[in-house]
Length: 202
Length: 165
Image (cartoon, rainbow over all chains, first blue to last red; front, side, top):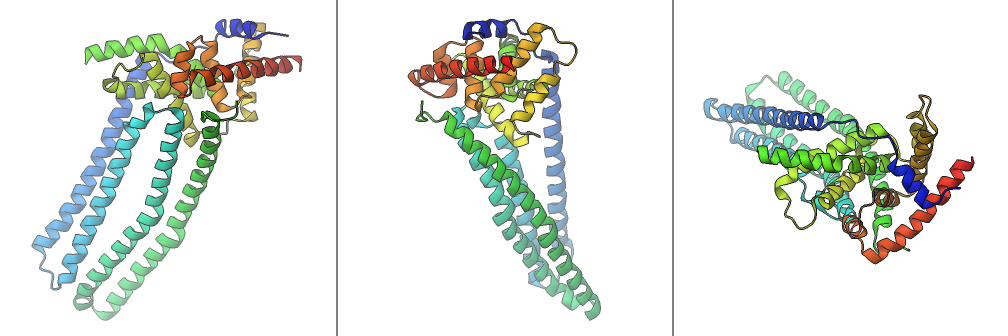
């Protein structure tokens, strides 16, 4: 039978110590910084290349309908929107002001952040999907005049098929997984938030 | 840069052990505790220029450590429940001494407390002053004292009942 003082003595005599040295932490800082920078670099490059190709097409190819130019503008806007959103999330994660908040405020921040991601993956993605579909439809006007009818019909069927697969299979699956994860996380956070609440029963 | 590195090294040496204890008490698993401790210090490094002397460095680091532990839920492969008790025992499978067994039992008992109680009691055990714990946990000192009294009692009971088994 031990009292709290004995438990405290036991605590001070414990062996488990961190087996991570200062140099290891420093190395991990450098690695994570370069991995983050590398990821951001390649995303920026691919976005810039995609936008440059679309703009180059605008300038060099003589499209016969104005709808194609509008389609390209919508595509560029979608790509830029996606890139900026990703960039904001990276920055929010790496330099969060809320990291220094009281635990209960931080839990609130995590919940808000996850809900924001959920909105991004569902509502915003749906808008994004519609915009891309509209862009393809607008480009289809040009194709209608440029391609033989059956080739045009084949292309339309393929694009519709691809959109349906993305929407019904891939995105549904992604949203389902994400929602399950978010629901579980929010349940956990709700439980902990109650524990940290100043007014919790003493 | 080198001043910042020196300061960071000093902070690491002064606080890493306590942060590790806090993370170990919270997760009940030394591998996760090491990961969380590293993650905490990475965040400390990233935010070092934002420290404004409004509190002690240790308070500031504890706050980051607690919030890192809380967000650990997002990526945790397994839940912090009874199953972690088994992993605590597994950590001491190489013919543990009596003292190691008692320490393992202590961590097992801490794991049976609620999350916020684990965080508070590890700081109490590491003899962090009460005003600092209150600041870190974001609750009043009066409330904290009542909580600590209750948690000490609860931990002692859990430990003794685990010891009897």
